[in-house]
Length: 166
Image (cartoon, rainbow, N blue to C red; front, side):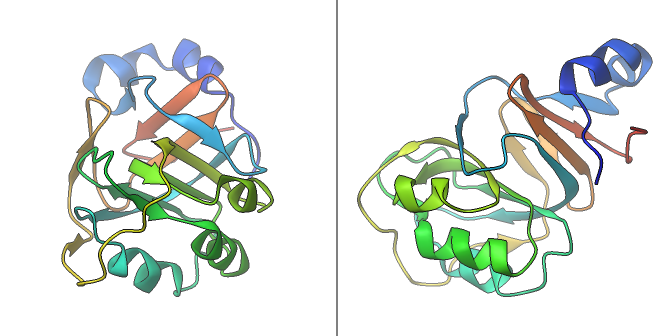
C-alpha cells in the first residue's frame, strides 16, 4: 500500500472529519517496530489482560491488515511481545494498535511491522481466552469498527470508514 501522510489526509478531507467518517485518535500511543508508517483494513479485538485471542488472530493471514486491540487501557501487563510481533510480520500483518502495553521492545523494534501501544511492561498477560473478536471498540476517543481503515505515521493515527485515496 502506498504511503499516506496523516496530516495531509486531515488537510485534504475536512468534510470527512466534520461528518465523523475520518477520525483522529488522541496522541496517547508510543511508536514501536520498524514501520514508522502503515495503513490497512482493521480487524478488532476487545479483551482485558488476556492475549489468547491476539495470538489466534495473528496466526491468520494478515493480507496487509491492521490488528486493533482494545485492552481496556490496562497498564498491568503486556498484550503483545516479540514472538507475536514476529508472527504478525511473517503472516503479513502491517500494523498493530494496542490500547494497553507491550513487552520485548527490542524484539518488536526488530520486526518489519508498525506497532502503537500505550507503554511497555515486563509482565505477561493471562492465558484464559476471554474476549471478543470483530466488535466495535473505543480507543483514543474514537470508535473503531471491524473493516474500517487505519492510517498511522509519526504525526498520529487516523481511522476512516472507507479507504482514502493516496
